[in-house]
Length: 394
Ligand SMILES: *Cc1c(COP(=O)(O)O)cnc(C)c1O
Image 1 (cartoon, rainbow, N blue to C red):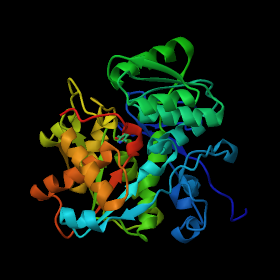
Image 2 (tube, rainbow, N blue to C red):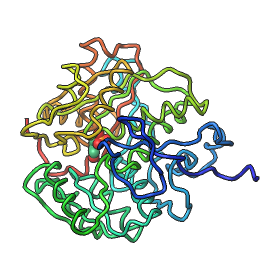
Image 3 (cartoon, rainbow, N blue to C red):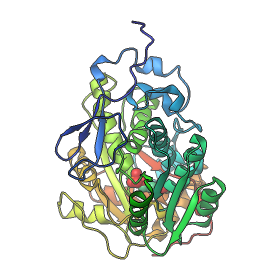
Image 4 (cartoon, helix red, strand yellow):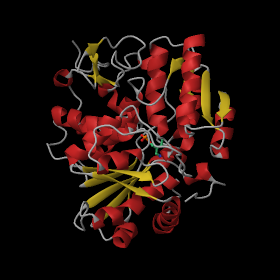
């Protein structure tokens, strides 16, 4: 056997609730008990997948093909997603009073947000497994990413979003050829419309964590951090959390990387930041719960954070707890202040969600969860350009 053979593909899927295993080479949603499924790989059998080798590869997330589920190289759709810069931000570090700050600038992804990573994998995999029509409920950015990858794959996409989604995102979805439906309501209401289409028309549902592969795309952020920091991880990661795919994905990636020998057993403290107008994970973390109750009357101009409930809530809360991290909520106006400060300090026009990560740091220091010796990675999950015309609510 040739040593250049890439051992692509998962060996099976595993229920995150019960551990029950499922065949991976079929179109599938949640497990039989309604929990997210994780793709598992034969990590011990993978050869030639060390950081030095990966360093010579293409500058997108397909550099990690061995730990991604797509088997057929022709089904690997690419618009240049991933391998975003990790930008040193010394003036922000000084302003916050911590040793070092990096900003992982996910606004540089196709469609201007890190949703590109997840939808790249989900759509590639849906194409490989024979899906014919895709659908997604979204707070905005997931919809435009789904539209982009659907167009690239030649598959029709139905996107259902709240009618007050930022206008640039609505225009983007339409320009990318998706069927756009607007709804007076929240992402959870949009989910009901998609489920109806699944039953009536056989659409394949790309909702957050309701198919197994968006999280596989998002986990590549964890691999990139280790690569970009030369085989180590930061002390703390601050992540603006909606459905939590990225946080859950990175936490999964760290375990895989330890198994692969890329990193040791140390883990960053994982922090969730949400908006005060929609903070179900923060409330559940404060109350020590394993699951989060649905947030009533969700509102924030950070549309990516306007997610009142998450099917992966227990996975988010577990990662926060196991890492020694935590969760805080910040108001829209404080986020907006930090968008302005980050712009001046770094040259990055962040999304409100990116501003929220910096806004969280003083609160986390006050709580004794981050200290001045810490090296901190802030996730700017989207470009500020996608929110032009939106103003803070609270
Ligand atoms: C979707 C989104 C989030 C939340 O991401 P999750 O992984 O679903 O928690 C944060 N910021 C932006 C800009 C988003 O589009």
